[in-house]
Every structure is written in structure tokens, then in C-alpha cells.
Length: 194
Image 1 (cartoon, rainbow, N blue to C red):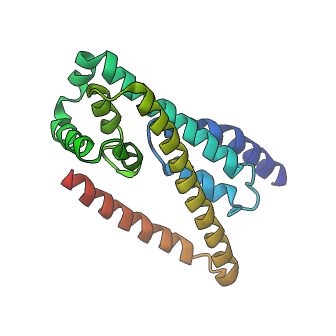
Image 2: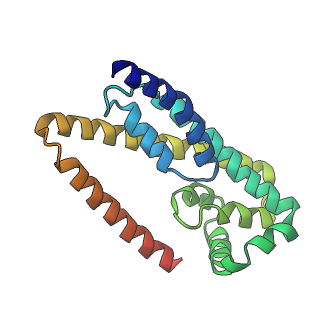
Image 3: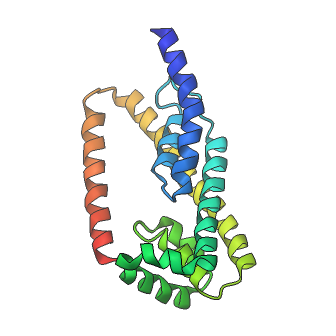
């Protein structure tokens, strides 16, 4: 049994970083949350993820993904617009936000569910200078990685200490279901407004 757990721990380390890269490349942060929780040692037998490497990988992947969207929109505008015809409302809202908040929207959009892939496209359609976008995107990607990774690592530490304190095996699945339900309702309400 112990050899199975060692093999699982090693494969989570290797495959975890690969999954984290590709998931963060698309702008998602759930993989970084899971990696942060796992790297905090919630499951003692699975401790092969390093939170600093997770933050670095997720930040670089997020930077590359957002930059790629920007350059696709900048140099392949006609082709990109074809795929986003059904998102006209989100594009218009992003355009308004860009005019209103300027470069600050580059920092904000990484946390907005349902619109985080639209904003780099709209910035690419606009006349923003690509050097400034790359600089702000690089900084905001690392801030995003540190905030989400640090929060999830702290959350994993909190889960571990709470579990050690109360040690009831039935309480955590119930709490997880409640948290997932609340997040689902919250994200559905946000996306209906956008």
C-alpha cells in the first residue's frame, strides 16, 4: 500500500505541474487552488507539489495565454471575431471597462469569471501598445499567481489544522458540498449579469 502511495505522490508531482500549466494557460485558477491546497500537506502522503513552483508555472502559463489572445486579436482580427459573435455583449462590456479603467483592467480581469478571456481580445482589438500590455500582463499574471496560490496554500493549511483539531471524517465532505454549492450559485449569478 505504501508503494502505491509513493507512486501516486510522484505522478501527482509530475502530472500536477503539467495539468496546472495547461489549465492556467486558459485562464483558469481552479488547478492552482487545488495545487496550493495539495502542496500545503492536506494529504500527508501526497506532498510532491511545491507551492513556489506551482505559482511560477501558473503565472507563466497565464501570461503566455493572455498574451497569445492579445496577439491573435491584434493580427488575426477577422478570424477571431468569427468565433466570438455570440459574445457581443461581453465584448461591448469589456470595451466600456477598458475605456473607463484603462490599464487597470488588465489587473482586474484575471479574477472575473466569464470575461477573463474576452478582455485580452478586446485590448488586442484596440490601439493599446503591445509593449505596455505585455509589461502589465506580466506583472498582473504574477500578482494573480501569488494571490490565488497563497490563498489556496493558506486554505489548505487551515483545512489540515481544522481536521487535526476536530477529526470527524464526515464533516469535510459536507463542508465541501456546501462550499461547491455556494460557489456554483454565486458564479451562476455573476455570469447571468455579464
